[in-house]
Length: 422
Image (cartoon, rainbow, N blue to C red; front, side, top):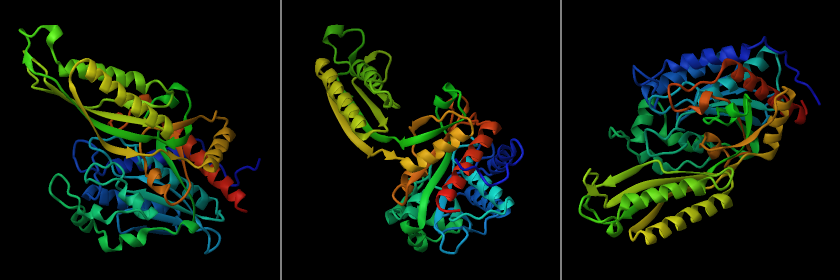
């Protein structure tokens, strides 16, 4: 097995540099009391400019902010015709966010380029770092627009979306300094791209449970969402006998428990009732109506669809037994996005070379890698986060785990270079 040709930085050097960069980026927020950095906001522009400086200081040969706000840093390969290996994630956040979601993947890529530059090493491909901006889907009714543009699947209708303040996507992009008319030029030629790698905190508890710092992602889960309406008969809580009731909440409660049971039937599927509203919602009235949401996910589409069908069938059976009306309205369905077997293998071999047990696991959350899969093979490496907490100020990944993750990423990149004739 070949070994890395770059010198090994001092212990925790990667982790310390990455954490320093993460803390710098944490300082750019739309809100004075928490980390909220929404897509195309002033703080997003500040963060993009800071990332640009980081990329240049690390050794990127060129750095630009593209027409849709993505920061692109290129470390050229050993020939002008060299294809590109893309490494990236996002720098926008949810409201009241943590410091690691997305940004970790960006600073990890910067760390890889910094190590290559310090070693004076050029690869048979360009290493390109990408800092996307529209991953969290918080500000506009858009989804992964930055990475979709690069993959060539951007929908121009996205520009007409409006945020909660009545500002259009198009105007916000212009205010940011972007160029709506040039978005089409962002799309890459697939023949010139080798693949896309993304480091991301797990946002779940599996790695912590397994006492492992990293894991190799097999697929990003497919997802199905439904709005469910249960209609019974409201009545006086003191005068309607129990046997004669059409209690919408009691029926919905049985459905929620069925969702939990059926979601757990297969090892890797999950099902969640995340929102529930009761009408008329009064202490002395039998509930006449309930609305709730269903979120059902899994890495295998056939398995997920079977779960969805089982949950819907059981909800209908419960409604019939309890003589309530039921309406199930689909509003989102997305297929699973498998990671490249070759990139999974490259990451797993790098993990093993660092004396860590390779663990393969699916991603329950969506990522920019989903959009990038339309362009090229994708690979993802998860990093352990404390208690699986994410989208929360308590979100945390240790310096040592981050250090190991970046070393593994560099190792994988260098072995990919060896496979390409470096």
